[in-house]
Amino acid sequence: MTILSIPRDYTLCTNSEEVKKELLTRFGHTKYYRFYREEVAVMPKDQKIFQNIFEKHGIAEKPAYTCFTEEYNWESTVSK
Image (cartoon, rainbow, N blue to C red; front, side):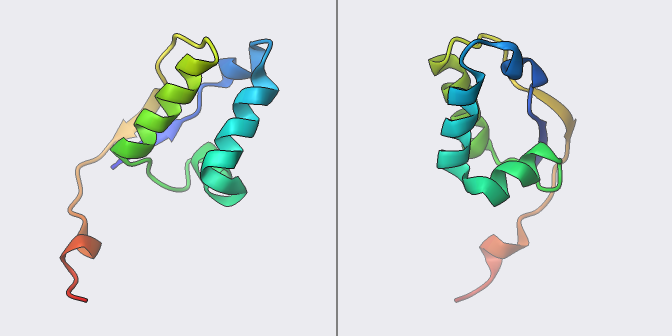
């Protein structure tokens, strides 16, 4: 798992409202703000989504990560 620190410089770009709107549309308010407040880890598939949205809106900088952890995903082993 990786904790994502959403780059604050995206708010400085001219289309910051469009970027935020797309992030909110894609992740929903709850998940977006959990990422923003660093309450939940950002999985690799979500990291790619962030990167793609930033690139789409002309933000070349890759998102900065505050920490990296390697943990076992217990939920994937639970029998259903």
